[in-house]
Length: 162
Image (cartoon, rainbow, N blue to C red; front, side, top):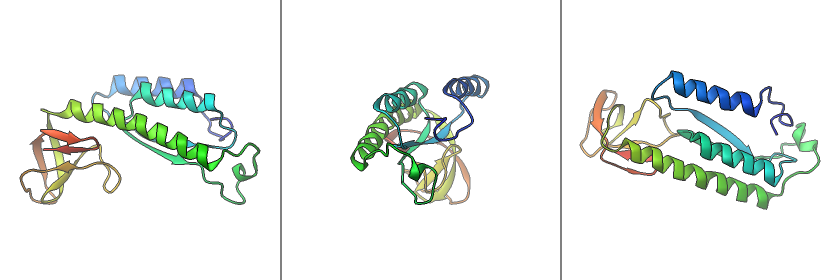
């Protein structure tokens, strides 16, 4: 699929890079996105992607369904994937990521984290992009625009509670 999508890399290279990054940078949060249902994507290829997601356990992951944009090279390709299959693959990948996100959030409970306070009752960790990722829900109001050290007491899958 990487070749069909004209990505100048390989599965082996990406797996090796992630392994080296994690080994060299403790506490690293890796963010990525994937497209489900690119023209020609087979069930086997999708399962390979799903296995990769489950093995790699990305801290932040988004999945989008391929959109056939008129005039694009991919729009003219044969073997367009049906909307039903794209949606099913999207749901399956996001379900896998939700399990991973829950594991990662559970592992944060009891830890102290430095957060940036966005509103009196919400903050974000250094790994969280505003309006994209989960939040840290604060049980005690803090001053927006400041950094604070908080103890994580729970989670709601994508959001942490402190």
